[in-house]
Amino acid sequence: MRQASRPGYRIFYDINGWAFVSVALLLIGTFMVYPIIQSLWMSFHAGQGTMVRFIGLGNVERLTSDPMFLRALTNTFIFLVVQVPIMIVLALVLASCLNMPNLRFRGLLRTAIFLPCVTSLVAYSVLFKSMFSYDGLVNSVLLQLAIIDQPVPWLTDPFWARVVVIAAITWRWTGYNMIFYLAAMQNVDKSIYEAARIDGISATRRFLSITIPVLKPVILFTTVTSTIGTLQMFDEAMNITGGGPADSTLTLSLYIYNLSFKFVPNFGYAATVSYVIVVLVAILAFFQFYVAREKD
Image (cartoon, rainbow, N blue to C red; front, side, top):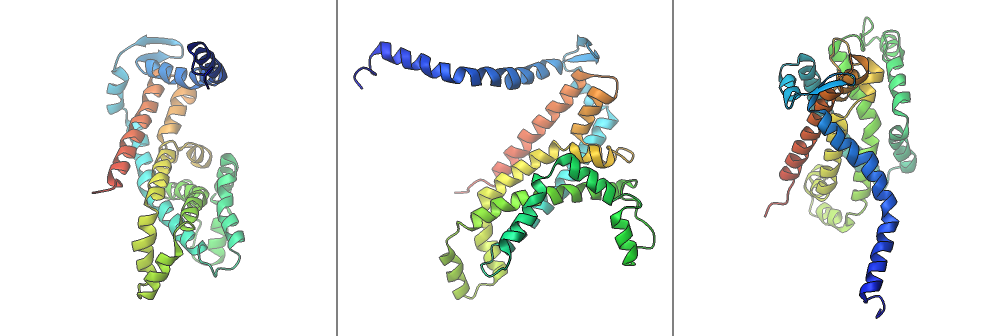
């Protein structure tokens, strides 16, 4: 201890510590910090491919008059507003059901609901595309059950295409969020529920007045992460519908891909659109934390 307090030893330990973290810092700086700064600088440029010129905030002005960007922004918000609440509520209900002590095959059911989130994004997207094709499994089953008279154009109608994308995302990520809720529910003191049950409080009231307030931090966390994931949604729109029909499922991330690799490459404008996602994530996360804050 006496030796460690000397200035020479302190410098030695400081250098030793920085030597241990230097490789990690170098990798983070190279593959995370530098691309962020480079993309920000690139967003002030316009041009095709590597032939670019500095235009300042010209790309930001272009956003307001770009109908395809506005379409992608609208579609992304539709997916966000519809899909995230459905998934959060469904995950809460499933977690509450699977937390029942007298439920049989709980382990099997938990595993079955969690399994979709470990499947490959591309694999499950291709599977959904096959199932919801005009002559796919879903239409065949509905026709056999006489629920519909003719096949539903799931992937060629704008409304149904959005429904399929929302169903696919909900199927994959509900189990992921459910695991967080289930873990939080198992840490709640059971004597609280027992006291409420003795007082004659119904199961629905116990769920709303005890479970939901206790799970508030977890619900906030899953809401923020789900919001970020939906704003960055790419795989489902790309592999199931390709952004169609008529750009009805075009998302911001898919539009960035098209600007960079499908249309005439315009990396500056694509970088500007990517920073729109960053700003939206920051604003929505701040709003969610503000709404869910503890009030004195």
